[in-house]
Length: 139
Ligand SMILES: [Zn+2]
Image (cartoon, rainbow, N blue to C red):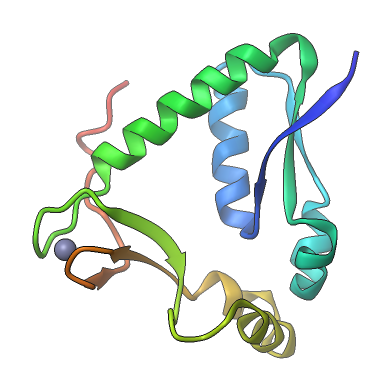
């Protein structure tokens, strides 16, 4: 039995969200390097981020689930300003390059990094913290 890295993340929170969703579906998986990345975000680039590793026997199913979840996320992430679905969860501020953000986060601890994620609409440029769609989520 082998574990194959299926997806990589810069953010500890995003990585754990995906891990949780796959575990809910009974996928045998774990996060590699999550503690290294959390302790020292600068290392995140060096080691390629947090890797979501999946049991190779369930790889196809995991891939399909991720595709399905990504599609659901796209549907759910609607810009409250213009209604566009072209919205992504990104690190703020956009004008800052990633290495700078990494240094800032390193200096102030990883809380700085996790506190700087926002939804950004690529159509109108509107940024927002939360999407109120939890009630609409299907069981
Ligand atoms: Zn918009």
